[in-house]
Length: 328
Image 1 (tube, one colour):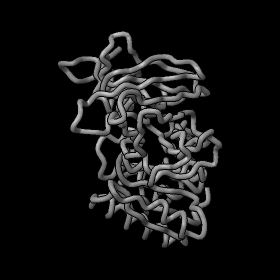
Image 2 (cartoon, rainbow, N blue to C red):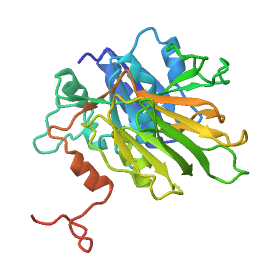
Image 3 (spheres, rainbow, N blue to C red):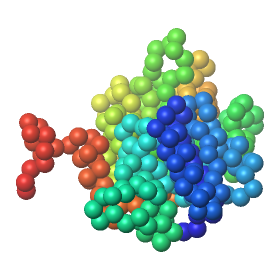
Image 4 (cartoon, helix red, strand yellow):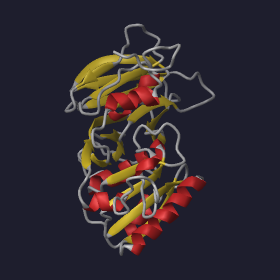
């Protein structure tokens, strides 16, 4: 891998991420690389500015933060084919990130037995000692039927009869929740899959997730966990009022349409990876499908185990008393 241009994306408000970013930038620049540093977080989106002002796309985007920082980078960089390498620095759960010990820079580990001063992170990347995971993304577009996109929505290059807005992208999930706090926190949503009405969900909302996002909000709402090597779409209702409304898994090529139902006051917010996307009125249609571009995520582990990650992050154990796996 070439490392001529690198973007360092660090989590807003994290001093640990700031320190690591300074170290990474100094290390890379000493090796002749061009480095751009940007801060990402709630209310702070650096990617439109970077994509508009930087003369060239980077060879690599290094994310220093938690899952939220990774999700933001994936949403903006997937369509450009920029590989993303992430480390859990200042983050919390870190499902999508590497442990910080793998962020090995020049001088780290000096004096340790068997230490190789040339075995740094950047040298590993230049020697192509990594794998690339192609994680499925989701894409959502809103057909308002009046040809007037809502303020803040992005114009789509896909023709939707009657006009529309989008596309919005997500690596984890899209979900629909009631938009007005002063009303009962429930909504009614009709789901159509490949042209066939499947169900009308009355409850707290609906989650449409990727396998990557199956361990996030969808899991908390009772949905299944899908291995990221499987391409599929998970549909999970949030606290449905009907016992027959259950999570379903559909093929990745499915085309899903969601309509808010009810009175005009029953507006619904669409969220992407926990970030606000847009607001839907009853009569609007949101069309969701597999994204056209997967996100390219670098994997440094020699033999990565998804199940080991689940065990560690979700605190699974063979014995609830010992808190350790069994000897089987």
